[in-house]
Image 1 (cartoon, one colour):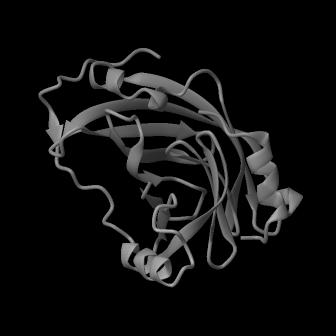
Image 2 (cartoon, helix red, strand yellow):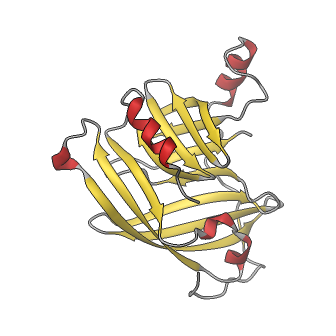
Length: 215
């Protein structure tokens, strides 16, 4: 998965807002406990009022106590750009958050050094995989003194089956220069390779961002 330059560039224009590892037995199952549904009722209300179409792709977000329904602004393949109330913008590439705006700390760029194992999670049931990506960070005020470019995340991903049929839990543990340990989790349908839920690091000092994909 790779972020498109167009999506990341658009963020700045909107309001601030394999290999290695041990084998994993397929008999191992994890409880199906993704982040709870966030504001589906709010999306249903908005659909009834004509604010969103019931069949449109949807994204529910939670960051600490803040919860919101995001509206799809742009789609190009697996790259999507979402806007939530309050000027918060999130760019996703498949299940991954690859850019943010409108938060105290923002992701302004993401690029992978090689393939992303999350694109095909099934092999992660048998063997963990490594991935490396570089992330650009910026404070909300875009003060150059607070910007960091090319922060390296060295990660290992593995998957287990869950109690929910066809749903895999992919856990990604990373070490990032100057940031310590980071953990991301993705609940992925093994038939479609699409995520139903995710929990991701989106910047220093911020709680994990919870996502529920409704398409």
